[in-house]
Length: 449
Image 1 (tube, rainbow, N blue to C red):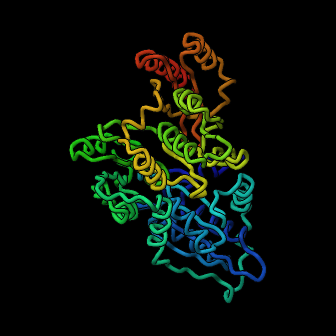
Image 2 (image 1 turned 135 degrees about the vertical axis):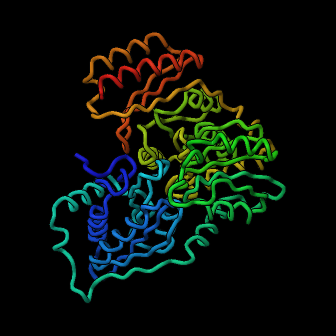
Image 3 (image 1 turned 180 degrees about the vertical axis):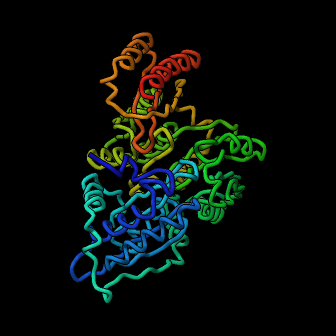
């Protein structure tokens, strides 16, 4: 039974259990102990997004890590994939990210990467949990002479920007392109604009002035409406919206149309296949993917596998099946030939590469996939019983599925990071989709609260 870690690390309201300084201290201790080896002083990278609570959690983690005789290397605000990169680039033993991704500023979270830049396995996370709750990890501390130290890595942002630029084809530049960036007042606010400017683009940054409390506030990948307006208003070629920790991307074409992660998967999958770089002719997505993605990939003669929700499960399947690209509808895409984890800036660069190679605007590239009407309702719940054990919810799901037939689908699942039940319906029309989705959500609301 997992008590701390969800599908994407630990997450909760800052300064409330489990996102307290005390828990963070013990996570630092447990992580440091897990990566200690004889004859070697481990180093753990610590980075964060722009939430005000990041200072509290950062200092608690540093205290825990140093108390175990391990050194902490601080990089400050940097996207989650940037911290994964710096972990491998600095040959550190692990990396810790303090972020709640797309959640509001009141929340925060902790994610942990291995020295190879991959998120920890379920087994490793459970080891950390067991140590945190054992109440004896503090007894494993070394002598005063063996305490760890904390260092600040001043050139982390520069290293990451160089890495990002190398993922864009060398034979192309972004000169003459006008790009609008929505940085969500989050971790990409410095590195994203610099990256695109250094590749030659004219950049108009939005929401790039974090104050600790405005991260994801009516902006970013969850709210790209203002970005879409600015793209049209400025006659830009494209717009990109990142989430708070920079691992997701939502794109906007030159006409102001918002593209999902599924559409980007189809565009980039086609590009990779054309270049002979789509390993095993395979694209991996999750069960949340729009029906249109599967149809588009079938039309391109590309194999398609779906996993349960969560980028960690997409990555696991990619590694098992040898896929080079995979991702989620929310914009969390993984390009394994470039990075070990989802990276919003890398995804944006691959979209731009496709535009350059095809010599077509994004609106034209997006026609590769028809997006079926989809509605998602997040219902706050007090409990998370197995859906199959609640007869009323089962009945309404089956009723809707019967009425939809082969013209849509239903997916009801719990969030792995929040007290939410996600009700998703796809249907033949927007009217049908909304009616069915609200019908199921109403039953979920009544039965789980």
